[in-house]
Image (tube, rainbow, N blue to C red):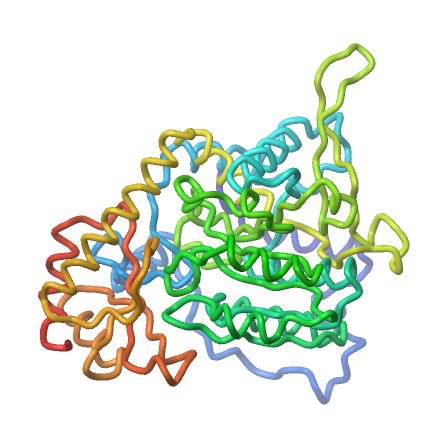
Length: 446
């Protein structure tokens, strides 16, 4: 089968005849002549297929990829091992062409895949129920805040400044339309300032949002935060890297009401760009308020196991004033990729990869310290830590790139107090040689 079949002149004539016109120009007769474009577009002339492939290949070869050079950029999207079977499964036409499975009798494969995704997310987070995925981690966090405000009737949302800055921006956008106040809680030593949180805890607080591990790679003290949050009957929302939950105690064990995050670390490549695949997990008590949709397990008339969409809260299915969310779709294909990756790795594999992330991050952190660098925050970390440079991170990264290294994230972009600070990401795919080379080339910037 040809991937692209061009339209012939005969095809064009037959199509025009079918719609009742003689020329293509007649299709645009409702557009005034004065605003129609005259002349030719300033684009290259069409090439033959071989010539086009050659040109695009030459352009692509100019890119520097994560496979070519040592790579230390994270800040929310991470380079992890993707089992080969992931691409094989999601490339099957019955999955990559599937849409919302409204007809369960012909969508059992898609529905079961989503059901498995929900189940594995619940196991990782320690929560009772998860939905069939969301657009990304940022919108999942904002939806959690909206659910909390609706449930508690509170008008104030407290979010730690250690939460990803882009997620905080999404939250503010959501809150604006709902007339909710967003208050950002300061950090201390790279984690949420407990005293500042206590100061802001009032009766009108709907929820408190923290990230675990947080944007700086630090592991927040969820047990301490939970006591403060629930003392005022607010809701405790945790945004979490799901891979880290292969080894860290899950937020559900600390009494979290809602756990959200992005499933990108499981089977979704960095070059996908985004949005990736948000997840949303909560307690049974809040099950009927969860945004998006859920897949449930049932039996047919013959007693055979089957899967169906259930508890659909989106406004397309119920009266708009009763809808709990405006989320109208999800990232089903990426959720499938995450499901396949989690299944292929298994519990032991996920734990092993999470452990490697901690071990390699610790090695990098120690190596920087031994070479005289200042590590900005102390405490346990996962994937990432912050290094102080002697000049702007942009300059440092330009110098590193010239030597064939992709450096870390410039924290000065988001916070003036963190100018010249680099967020360094290390994963299981980062080798000892990569780390040693990176620290060596960073030597003149300490």
